[in-house]
Length: 180
Image (cartoon, rainbow, N blue to C red; front, side, top):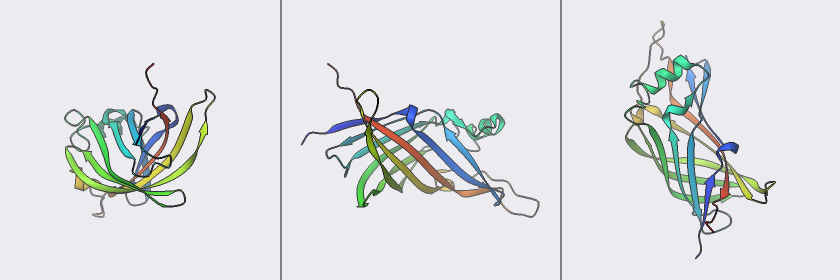
């Protein structure tokens, strides 16, 4: 069966994460540099193979000092582990536009299986005649499972940072150009 390779359009995609701070508010960050590809045998992407890479040094929380801290050994340790990667093990349609994506996430040299929810947003042709497909991927991971255990205590003895990280990726994919 013929396969189709799709690539993530970085101009129309974004990767965000959210973490609780002091258990009273949420800090949101993004990764500005990432890439990914999807290989599918069907038009509905059932059983597609998905590979994704994030450049840790592109982390952005709108606070340069915090971004520098996230890159050091307390968190991502970007000099030693410059990339976060994901490789799918299954992509199954649940119902309607809802899918379940399972795969292996590697962060800080630790690989763990994760399950993510995917909502198909639809498809359309762009102004150049290219077919694009949109997806929203969401899920939660525990950062401590990936060796990101730094935390501080508040004056009342509570933790300054939540352990659960919410992931939100809105991605648009386009068929990879075929060399002539």
